[in-house]
Image 1: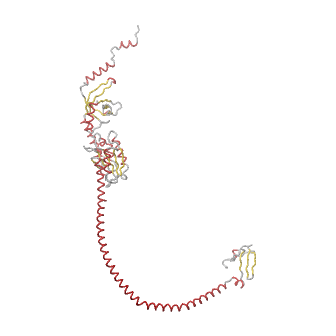
Image 2: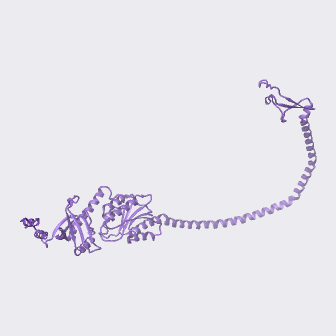
Image 3: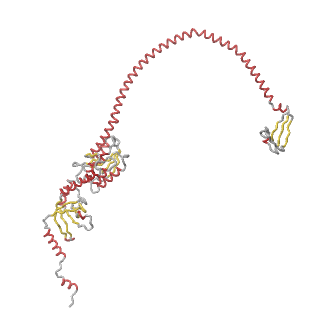
Length: 459
């Protein structure tokens, strides 16, 4: 009797394992190699991290081998840290100023875990070697500072001269934060005319380094022609909150800025890399604002207030001296005026007496002179009239000699064209023109038959 396909398969593979049995053996093998209570240390590079702060508080990390992190088929270890272990570990990291991020190499301690529904081998994190991580971060910081020193960038911004009157401020900060308000409060209460150009930037978190570097670059592009100083401020916080100011993009942006960069980062521990490469580092935003106000105030005192006070004192002394001199001069002028008035009064009296004595004689002399001149006026006027009459007669004779009628009576004629204009030249005539000839006793009309003009040499 023939058997069906299913009966044949069962009969030939009666020793085949079920999936559950297979997983039982996998768990048994893992338990023998890695007992549940046996903790192991694993070193790897963070490829991805998910911190569920808003959810259950667990943390999930994907680790890869640092040497093969760029490989396409790099092995991945799924790490889970439950809320009970992750909460104190997160607090420890924040206290030490550490923020776990992709690319960081960490050493973890925990137990191996096999998740049957997905047939996935994972790792339950119970401890993280913070000491080793701090050492690597310190080494990275030292390497960054050494690289900046070798490139001549560590002291580059510090070598830029800061204006004696830094009133044009480029501000890199997160608007609305306490550090932002503290810094601006110092400038606003100073009474000086500060001009602040804000470049808003995120100051903590994974995106902070890029945002801070971009803001510094944007303000630096304006150059010393528009800004006197760039100020980077951030209020107090944990070391983790301030980790962005140790990032290489921020350090290089500050070091290569074309404008002096001042920092006012509210940290209480060691200086950040941003502080070390900046032109000047202040411990808080408030202190940074106070230093700017103090610098402008020193210039104001040296160049405005003290000179103005000196000018005021000198002006008062000068006015007092001038007033004293004026009073003396007024007294002298008064005495001299009285003396001159007395002398002039005496002179007027003497001259008045002399005039009174001489007036009758002067009047008599003037009267005699007037009578003599009056006697001469009549004959002179008659003589002048005679001479004018003789000149008039002579002019009349001369005009009579040039009278046209008299000339015509003497035999001369006057030739005119038909419009009555005098013909003065034969060149002005043409054959056919009508001429009017005036004689003493009448006129005659004639027509020009031909014209012959004499050469100029003959004329």
